[in-house]
Image (cartoon, rainbow, N blue to C red; front, side, top):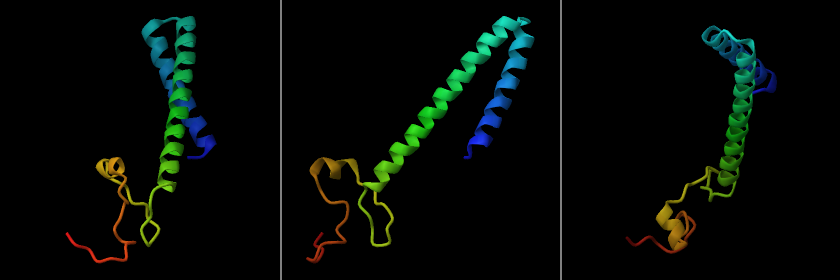
Length: 96
């Protein structure tokens, strides 16, 4: 998502929030304070969302890959045992 789009969407949400708050409270000072608090919460949520996406991308880059380059998730029990994510790279035949 591009920055101008994010800012315009956030501004629109804040305007709707401010109008709703004003109609509920009939107080400009309460509306201003609550709208500023809402803006801060929106920014914190946006920051945490971006932080999560960066963390997720980093984990995908470190994940084992198939031959076509797609990341292969490991099961938790395989991680705990230290097993490889795939048997595709082994030279010996598969014996179940």
